[in-house]
Amino acid sequence: MLGLPGAPRTALYYRLIQILREQIEAGGLQPGDRLPSERELSARYGVSRMTARHALEILANEGLVERRQGSGSFVARPKIHQQGETLRSFTEDMRQLGLEPGAKVLSAGIREASAHVARALGLGADRRVVRLERLRTASGEPVALEVSHLPARFAGVLEEDLTGSLYAILARRFGQSLAYADQYLAASTAGEHEAQLLGVRPGSPVLRIERVTYGPDHVPVEFVSSMYRGDRYRFHVRLVRNGPVPGGGADTGSGG
Ligand code: 16G
Image (cartoon, rainbow, N blue to C red; front, side, top):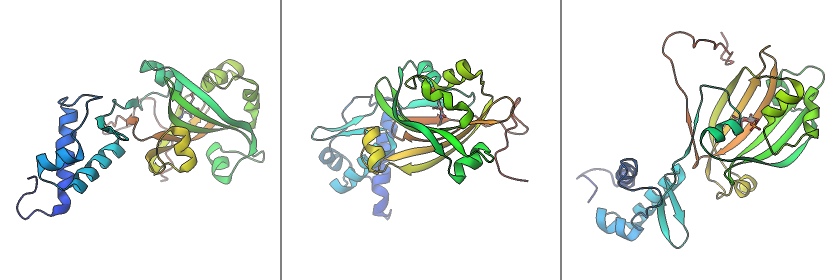
């Protein structure tokens, strides 16, 4: 039995999750290995099948476990690990990880920016932006949905092949280099449409990322609003105690 005498029953699934997580993290269970079934977990740990199912569901939401209809639960592949110290493109990130970057253009055109986008890009009277919606793939697997907005002076990107690197186009066609970005992450869930594109179930956990990327002259070049698969992505940010990071200094909008 997992429960300690007097411990609330609601904690059982939590304890079971810890046990399974430890087994996966310690390497006792390897990617692709089959986990015990709900029935086996229930017998082995003295919990109800409901508790076992709940624990597996939570591990699946965390992306540690993959549930396959009719064949059980398996240890998932390691997540794509993105580090947040240098400003890199999706293409550069994937190559660094030994994955093949890809992009499927879902829509591309000129639009009037919303107030949110106009503010992020610091637009004046001309509120037109290039809006580019792409599904990003890692070695063929959909991992993120990106909606990029660029000031209208970059309208020429629409004449380019957008299934490759946008940053490369900005550099080549406009001589536009990028210096730094402010990035915001928040938890969310995939709606029906996004879930279908990302190949996950509706309601699956995702990371919503907003990023404003600036040129060396501190002028915003891109505002992106993206949705990354929560089961496939892991972000790493290094935090330095005391004092500014050398070369840093972007305004985070916290005021003061
Ligand atoms: C990253 C950026 C995105 C940019 C893209 C360019 C985030 C959230 N997004 O995915 O803003 O458009 O890189 O990649 O980090 P590319 O040069 O491969 O098109």
